[in-house]
Length: 235
Image (cartoon, rainbow, N blue to C red; front, side, top):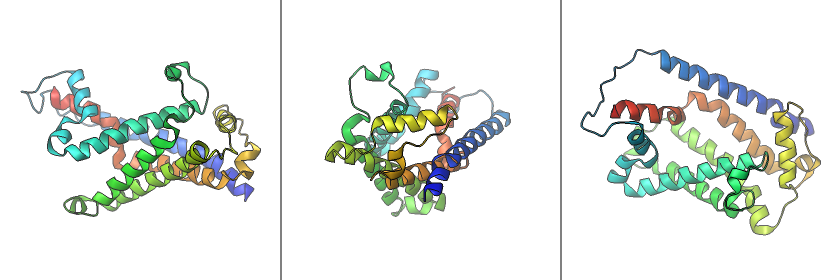
């Protein structure tokens, strides 16, 4: 079992990031090398510039206008996802810029993971009803289920620590593990392999690895293209 844990926590992590970086780079280069559609804006009567493109990308005014309920859900999801990224960065080391408002790692004491879990379930369930069901393909379901598994198993550890004071794996253990990966000197603290959190942690890392390898070949690549496409549309 320890061998399987090691494979998931070390070689598979490196392989997942290699596939993610290489695949994403190739996809972006291919898009860049495609013939330019020209510089004329698609909607010439709209206000132009990068600020308005950022407004379209991050505030989703079209969604807010036509489906306010979905817009609220998307806002909660994207803000929570950003805070989740910050939390993972804080697992590597303390960054002073993130501690402007003092807080424990992770932010929100489990609320962030709860918001993401609920949002992903709602995104999944709405695809079982028309008209979304008619427009969905298997990849849409795979991606949402995969993301839910990543978030759910990761949040289980945070909920146990934040809500029930079950903290056999401390922040220092996560930092030891992550820093060892970054310095190419893999080290697995004893708590990673033998604590009550081990099973959840292994599953969290395993599904996160699968997600990273799936990312460059999925629709979620739109996260890289949303801002440039909105700038093209605005002109």
